[in-house]
Image (tube, rainbow, N blue to C red; front, side):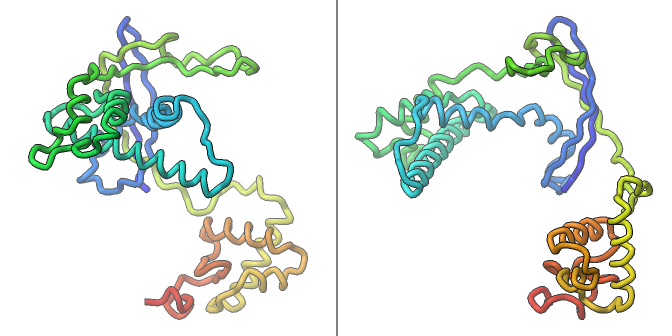
Length: 282
């Protein structure tokens, strides 16, 4: 994973200005293909998936529930809905690609769905013509009804539950009502130092677990070249359940006190090819 720290200053219509620190964790690890400032600039679109849920539940299904009464039928209906959704989104993207610089956010999903319904009987040419990409019936309808550019807005974070005990909100500098963002300044921060592999404060560890940890370390270091299954370690200790042993061994391996070399198999030495299970050897 890749971690990006940034400080974002937002200026809103009406003069409200506030600053917040954000940490973005992403699987896009190639910094050349995906610069940090570009990814942080897209952070405000993290709720876009809610639009997909709305399109599926309220526009396509119109609030109805699935009709099938058995798991196989429900799965078939879900795949059908998702396939139709993807096809419509593909047609919308194909349409805006014929107008360079047009944001796909301006395409109306409702118009695309209605156009597709109108063309169900005449299925040929629904998405595009063979000679002119993006010139199908859906594309023509979408391009004819492009929405205005989406506004970048911000509002305070609220607890919407009517039974919540938290009636007062913390003052985070955000406006009380939704405001249009007029300026966005992103400052990338230096990565935080790597924390130590082992915590310096072990006061939260119960005495029994600390004692068991020392017993396991002593046991593994008696034969450091041996691969120890968790079941065998638990049998040597005798006073611990197997589930507890699995959890503790995994936690100690994450802390690099011991090393995990396979499912439920641990050792005290650095991993070598001789200790790797046969399935993991090159």
